[in-house]
Structure formats: C-alpha cells, structure tokens
Length: 497
Image (tube, rainbow, N blue to C red; front, side):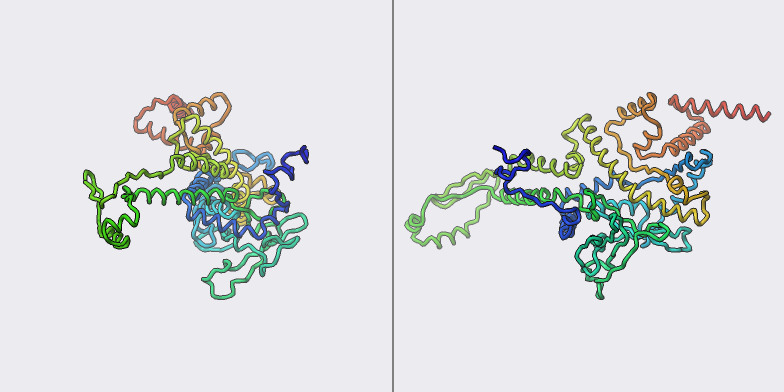
C-alpha cells in the first residue's frame, strides 16, 4: 500500500528512498556555492570546445553585431504631431549613433555600446550576472558625459567577507521590500596578485541618486522569487559536460593506443621449455628478444623465434556505439541550453528543410526571449540615462521630459536577423503574409535585422539612380514606384507653368 497520495512524495519507495533534498530560499541555496558554480562554468568555456561554441552561438543569435535603436515616442500621451515626433526620433537616433558607436560610452575607452552589450550578455551566460557602474566623464573630444564601467561580478561581495544577513545578500543591501539600496563593490579583484597593497577594500555604491538617476545596473535573470544574485546558464548540465569530456578523452586515448598495435607475436612455450630448448634462463631469452627487431611492412615475411606465431590484432576502438551515445548526451546538453542539437554542433547534415526549420523556430523563441530580456534590463536603461543627459544639455527638445519620461523614452530595438533556410520559399511566404494583411514590411524587415524605413529609402535612391542611368527593372513594384515619381514630376512642372 502506498504511504503517500503522490508517489513522488513517497519516503519508502526504493528508487526515492535516498532522495530527500532540503528546501531553502534562493539566496541560501546559492550562498557558498555560487563561486564554485562560476569557476566551473568558466573552466568549461575555456577548455571545452562544445561549451565555448554554445556560448558563441547564443551571443551571435541574441546580440550579433549589436542592437539597433528605433525611437518611437508615444504621441498619444505626449499629444504632439506625429510628423514632428518622427523627425524628433530621427534626430535622437542620429545623436545615439554618434555616442554608441564611439568608445566614449565606455569609461575605460575600449568598447562601443554594441561591444559592451555582447560582453554583458556573455557575462550573464558565463557568470549568471553582469554589473555596470553609471559614470559621468566630461571630455572635450566628446559632447556626451554619460558612460559605463563594466565590473566583474566577483567583486560584488559582502564587506570584510561578512556572512549574509536579513538585509545584506552577497554584496547587495536590500530593504524590507527586497529592493536593492546599496551595492558593495570590492575595489580590487579578490586574490588578484597584481595588486601588492591591501586588496580587501570595498566601496559602497548607492543604487540610485536622490532624484532617481540609476548609479549601477545589475543585470541578472532570477529564476526564483527573492533571488538577488544570478547563476550560470551551465549550472544544471555541468555534470553531463564533465562526464562527456572524460568519456571522449578516454575513448580517444584508447583509439590512439589501439592504432599503434599492428599484431601480436605469441609463444606457446612455458619457462621450462624455453630453458630446455635454448639452454639458457628465461631472462637471457627475453634479453635476446629485445635485440630482435621486426618491422611489419606490406608484403613482408615476418621471421619469428621457434615456437612463436603471429596473431592478427582486431581493435575494439572506436566503440561502435560511441557516436550514438555521444549524440544522446549532447541532446540532453542542448535541451539544458535551449539550443537544438543541430545548432549546438553546427551540423545540419542529417536534417531536411522541415525539421531544420522547426528546430530553428524553437531556438528563435528562446533567442527572442533572451533578447527582449537584455533589452529591458540593459539597453533601455542605458538609453534612458543617455537621453536624460541629451535633453538636459539642450541637444534636443523634450517638453515636460520628467513628467512623461516613459513616453519620450519609448523605443524598440532590432537585433540580428534569423536568416533563411530556403530563401525562395521564405521570401514567398513573407510576400503572402504582407498581401493577406497578416504581417507588415516593418515586421518582415525586423525579422531579418533590418529597419524598414532605411530599406525603403535605400530602394528609392537605387531606383532613382537606375532611371538616371537608363536602366530598366522587371520588378513590377519598382516600375510602379518609377511611374508614380514620373507623374509627380509632371504635375509639379505643370503647376510651375
């Protein structure tokens, strides 16, 4: 008879008898174990090719060459003319490009905004979190002072290595709501031997100023309520990675050893027979065998000692089930990373169009989710901090900015395109979606990492230039554009006359 209503809660079932995990808060579970998880995650990425490739795949698909800003202030809340706001948005985007494409957005003057974004996201995967201090550095060579200093998350820790308390959690001071109030940042990396002085020194950084401007951005992905620190993405699959690495190394070594053996030479005689036949001891016999050099070459006759025979060697490596076993383990790893096996191993040789597209669609759900998350917790806050400076310096007008800050800062971001598995089929599907009203040019362009307005403007320039050069096109849509432009010019000429 069962001892519980739910079999999963049974304390007598043999398969569950020793499975009695404890329940703790999210912070307690990470307390004392986070440093080990981070160290092992970094070791995997440094020394395991599959882990290193997986993190690069995530960065390439979520961030790619960077995130492109599209400013779209909310005209309904602001009550301003839509044409005016479109022109306002274009000017903001131009100013943003000047700042974000330079290294002056980095306090260290090394990275531009897109490089910072890629490094932030990589840190979140590898360490579970990322830190950025919001600084103000005036510079004559640059009209903007807002910049960011990226901080290694290891430096976020309790001062003097104190134990966690109710309101101090691994370097973060929180209030009774759980809201971060202050961050304790070690001035130097823990145990960094480059610094010969006292490395055990901390600086207290407030979460924001008295007027609400953020002073630090802590980017992490909590998986439980009340979790104040992040954990590496590889946490749940570390054992699989390590065991697979050991297995592959052992299999490779065995295969190399087997490949070095061509054949065995066996003797059926025991030690007494050898002594009787050769009139010598077994040791003397073995010494003579050492000097007996036999090379196995094609078509050669092998001279052997009396009584010896040559036995063929049939290697048992690589194991016949090796490939299937490794593939199964990699599927589990890919599931833990939310990456299909084909994308994890960059191998689509065993898939057709339908299965490859299904795998990529599932992967892109994860990529889009992660991109939205990094936009909300990194890109948008950075844009808001930068735009506040631009408005206060009078570089652009934004009436009642602080009263309607959310409306002025409204924006979206275009990430890398997902590409095409079959360009012809997917281009036709895109055209059908737009013609049937299920999609728009903006959505279709954004899915390929393009800005629809830039695409149209570039196309108009190309068509105009083609007309100037006397070139024709078979594209019906292009012909319509050319005819429309001709009619417009004719009407203008008639009005002038």
